[in-house]
Image (cartoon, rainbow, N blue to C red; front, side):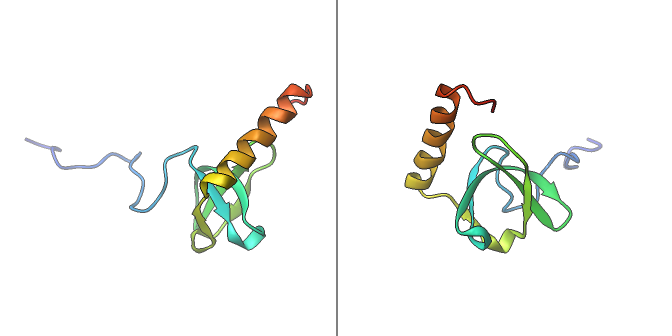
Amino acid sequence: MYGENASTNTDQPPGVPAPGTLLADTSRGDRVGEFQGVAGPYWSLRPVGGGREWEVEPRYVRPALLMEQLRARTARLNARSRGEVL
């Protein structure tokens, strides 16, 4: 059947994480951010508590450790409990 094996344009290249995956940027002191997408040769990350996105080369990114994920999520919840806009 025609187009049966064709991939859609929404497919990510191999090795690209799903949006929302927590990653650590080793070029910025293991700063943790949520993966937002691919922007040319860079990956876009956003702080877990919200804020300005930044771009990083994929070679400087690794999956966030469980402790780093917990720390980032706790910081977000603490900010929200203080009434900060996220």
